Image 1 (cartoon, rainbow, N blue to C red):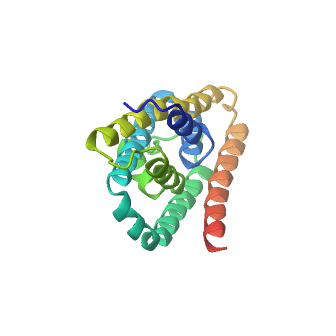
Image 2: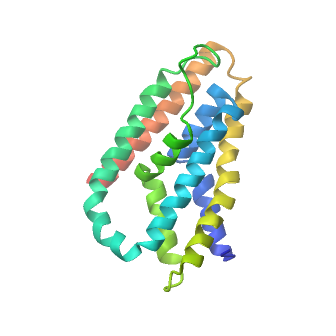
Length: 198
């Protein structure tokens, strides 16, 4: 496994800082609890690792087509974030309704492909931390490093959300929390679009 301290620090910093994944995990922890949020956490980690592996393996080719795909990725990712914000704003209190459920493993893994923060992270890791030969072993090692560091970092957000459940048990407090999380997700989407266009 790659044991480069700067790489591990980079993965930890990018994984634990606020972003779409962590906002969704905190909100899911509050609304559904830690146990029901675990598939989302695992999906984020596995989806992230596969994206990093693919980008590392295909770096030269990826650089050529990424510019062409960037607008579609940004719009798709921001559209999805906006939908998640709308869904979060309409979230009910914990346990109130059987139709409500957190984003699952597959949905969370697929979301990584339209999450701009994960793309930036994957490209930076491929450019800055991989040796030029990019053997299968070094790419698998990079993916393993991502899994081992990313999962505990994002778990912090899901656990924090789970711990807030008792404090947010009152319907008004939970509604305010869900609206705040929705506003942050929508604001993130808007910020990304504005940053991309201007």
